[in-house]
Amino acid sequence: MSEAAPLIALAGNPNAGKSALFNALTGARQKIANYPGVTVERKSGHFQMSDGRPAELVDLPGSYSLDPTSPDEAVTSSVIKGLQKGERKPDAIIIVLDAANLDNHLRFALEVIALGLPVVIALNMMDLAERDGLTLDPAKLEAALGVPVVPTVAVRRRGLEDLSAAVEKRLGQKSSQQGIVIAKERGHGLRKQAKEIANLTVTSETAGRRWSERADTLFLHPVAGPIILLAIMFVMFQAVFAWSEAPTGLIGSAGEWAAAVAEANLGEGFLRDFLTEGVIGGVGSVVVFLPQILILFLFILLLEASGYMTRAAFIMDRLMASVGLSGRSFIPLLSSFGCAIPGIMATRSIADPKDRLTTILVAPLMTCSARLPVYAIIIGAFIPARDVGGGVGLQGLVLFGLYIFGIAGAMLAALILRSTVAKGPNSGFLMEMPKYQMPRIRDVLLGLWQRAWIFLRRAGTIIFAATVVLWLMLTYPKVPIDSPISQVDYSAAGRIANVIEPAVAPIGFNRDIALALIPAMAAREVAVAALATTYAIDAPDEEAEAKSLIERLQSRWSLPTALAFLAWFIFAPQCISTIAVTKRETNGWKWPMFMLGYLFGLAYLAAGITYWTAVAIGL
Image (cartoon, rainbow, N blue to C red; front, side, top):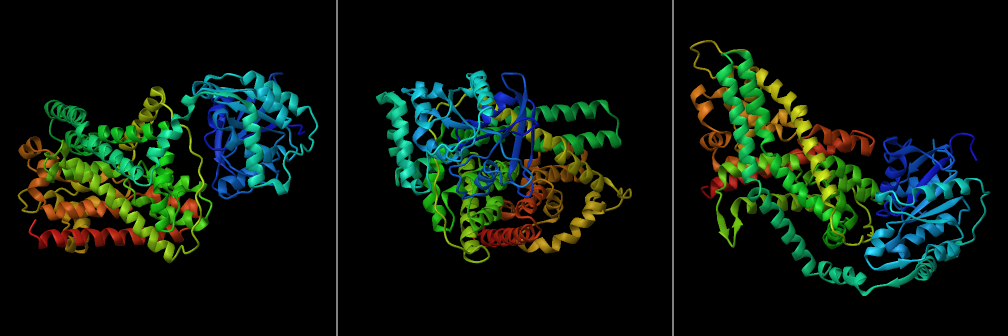
């Protein structure tokens, strides 16, 4: 054993509760980095064993086998075997098993035990197994495996002292070949052995535990399953508009009040204009959409916590296969509805490199929450707020359609990419189905708070900085008194926009849109702030006070232009952070530049076709 603090590896299948156990053991004493040479997260921390000695705990990526099929599994396998560059071999391994899913999780445990390393089993989530009517005998499992088994409930910190004591005792023992698994037993033999041990460990099971299987017969049905998924998405986007009306109005009223206070208490000059036009008019026009973003994430968090999200991936596997991907790509793509950056990072779990590359390249086509303020302001300005029948709102229906167009665009792009630059055989899809459970209100509220904080932090940093820079460029140089030229046209930003306008005029875009597209490269939401700031500066004082951004858009834009603007934002990759993370995940600039080029090309073409069609039919 190493003279340094013992290195304890935490391993197991995904959804076994490893992260909860890691957090419970290490508390706040954690650090996150990447393993040397690979873009796979390394999370480590320190905890005290029962004798007071410090130990380092490393949380390995979830893995189904020591025969890796993804970058995450490759890291886990190499660390356990002592082959990972820059990482010493663990002195002991804690294998975390989901007590309610033993027959699946034991396969990985049997492989690791066969290596002869000091192993301790954490039989986790015992409370959920008991709640579901499952009674287990840890002593029988220990006898069958030949290694210590400690029942734990990580989220309630139960069994941690016993687990620490078992690890300490195991460190003092010599490693020995357990002989549980031999090479010829891999595959069917290993599955059979795991099931036999699981059946031996389970002492009783109630009939109520089988309700999950009955629910899956409906949710995973080849016809009913996709219909239910579409219905859930439809309700979600209807709620984004229907539920957000009151809180959005309150935030908007607060912004108007703040602007009125600034107008009343500050004399004319730089500071008042900066606050009213730059900060309140620009940043405030984005913050007002926070309720809609939180409603979207509320649905996503509830679906994830309930266990339905993995079912959605299974349902989408057939569609994914038709374009050369697998259901495993669905989770990163679904994560991209929140933000493309974590979605792209989540592709690390995809085994096939061509699948992973394709998923990275199409992830920006999924409609992220940053697009929501853009969609909401245009829909609010040009789509009537009326029912189309059955309590279905037209605005929510249009928003649903925009998301569907984004998904369809991603599938079409994936099909083309998999047939050309990412050509290769289709890969299979294997994913464990977590059990259904009621979402914990505390976890959902924490997730919403984190999303709100991320959004407000962006509003206070990236969006604020971009808006301030734009306001300064729109304000200076000052137009001479009595000049017929508008302030926007005379300003530095206006002059740049006037150079760009001829390039985007064929697709129906005007100077104001050309001006908004530039700062939107920092973050898509900035497009709304840019339009609000532009119109605040360009309007007379009496109009600036009387008209909202929606009213100004209605008076300055045609419907074909508005529809083209929506089509542009379905495809345009206007986020520098997304390009940066793509560069990191693909280890070079080749694919980020390819992504930038093909998505801008799609955006221009989609906006042009939308505009030309709308004009042709007389909209």
